[in-house]
Image (tube, rainbow, N blue to C red; front, side, top):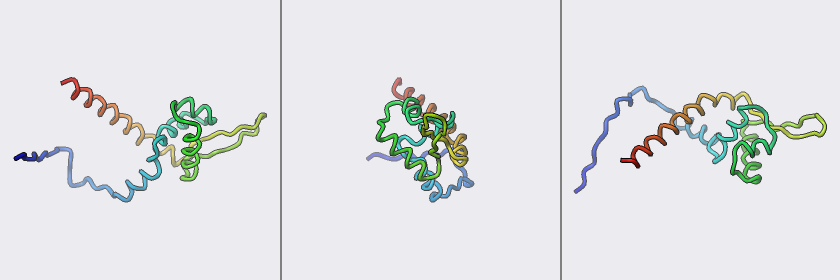
Length: 124
């Protein structure tokens, strides 16, 4: 019969209280397949549709258009027309989306860490 092993983590503490409804709200806001990548692209400055597509890579134009509309609807990006000739459309982050900078940096750091752990496990 197989027994399970209980693992005790030193970093887990009783003051680790997270409101799961807030987590749900954040997931709904930035949980799209491309959302974080699009936010990172726009954090580097305002961009046109094709510039975003080039930065992100393998996203289809249809998927990009859908994701941009969703982010705009959620209030994370603004779509605006530039009055220069010829007139063109440009996307930019809202101030609330800029607040994600440190969160995205932490997610990126964790992703690197997780990738290294997986590589080390494969190489054993």
